[in-house]
Structure formats: C-alpha cells, structure tokens
Length: 107
Image (cartoon, rainbow, N blue to C red; front, side, top):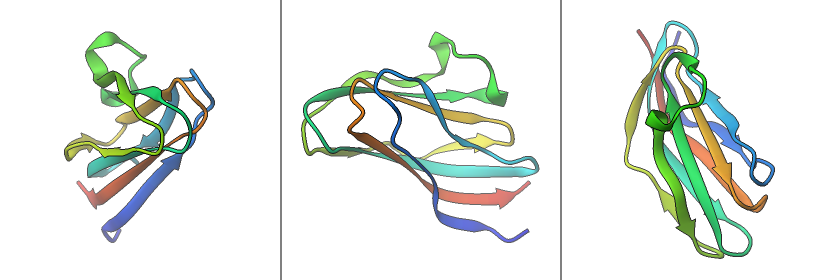
C-alpha cells in the first residue's frame, strides 16, 4: 500500500468525553502530530496514546488538563505509533477540534 501523507484523522468530541480520534491500521505505522484548535471559550484538553489499543490508564497521557485559551491553537511534537495503537482526545468543551496529521507507512 502507498504511504499516506497529510490529515489522518479529525475529531470534535463531545465535552468531557474521551474519544478515539485515530487508530493505526494493521500492518502500518505512523509518525504524527496533533493540532488542537479551540473554537470557543477557555478549555482544557487531554491527549493519550494507547499502545495496542489498551484500556485507558494514567501512563498513556501525553497531555493532561492542558489549558487552551479561546481562539488558540496548539500542536504537539511529532511522535510515532504502531499498528493497533489508538490516539484518544478529550476536551472540557465541545468547541475543541483535534487534527491528527502525519504519515502512515507500511511495516
């Protein structure tokens, strides 16, 4: 399969709901960054990386209750994920969007 570049997933989850935003397909790996955009009032966000799609646990969090001001956007550093890994997102407000950008490649 050809490499996939660019936007891999987008999510605008309901407020206070941990949501699976992106799962790496089988036989693939990905290098991603997550861009977070707050379209409303001040909020907090969470971002986790569940290896192998494991149930939610404290060890998975890359960001936890990070403040994001009204109208602000933030981007994570790039990180890698392998087949079956799940990136989950959460926001205190329904006005926050998450965009998972990067490259997905064959193993």
